[in-house]
Length: 71
Image (cartoon, rainbow, N blue to C red; front, side):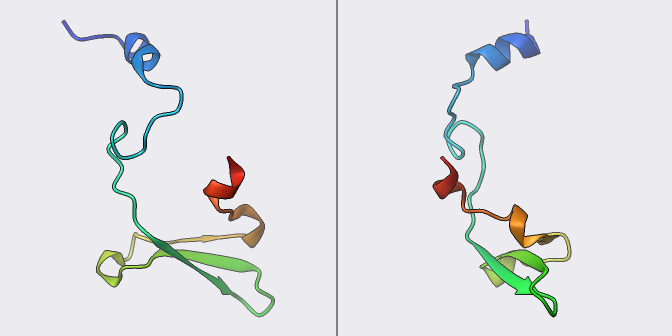
């Protein structure tokens, strides 16, 4: 019998490891400020092999932060 979503949620660590617990494949990112007044940032994979049409995002610079500094 499969466990319920609630049981799964309760079993997961409150501070999961991104790779081991969540299966994320962490990649280095490059942040490039664009626009005449640096009003947007492009967040792209550092490795050109991972750069495809759907592997980047554009964001307001005020919304971009280093997560290691936000712990």
